[in-house]
Image (cartoon, rainbow, N blue to C red):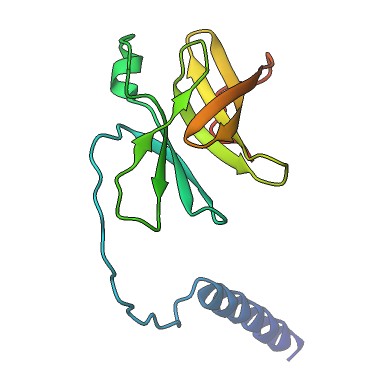
Length: 159
């Protein structure tokens, strides 16, 4: 009789674990369809990698790098940061920047707590991996500094 209680207890524990896993995985949830909305396709931005929205201004910053060219060692004039005004119907435009070296942006993060917004950008260039810090002024990126370290290997994003 004692062995049967142990078997029942183990069976109950297994059923509880399986049930909890199924509930956590959302197996029993129903999903209601929502309106699909509209999709706007923009051409000319090669290899968009990351985006960050400034909710206060409605500007979406997009990092873009034509990796097919850069992987082959070719110059890529398309690489850069693009900005899209999400509240208007205008197309995204490439921001000018004051960075002096090769600029191949990857992950980005926008910091808006200071007097002027800063954009932190992962830059993979032939000299190594860097975090570039830019001050945003209108539609221009003013380069503030480059951050690098021998331990900074293959960064993907900045937070």
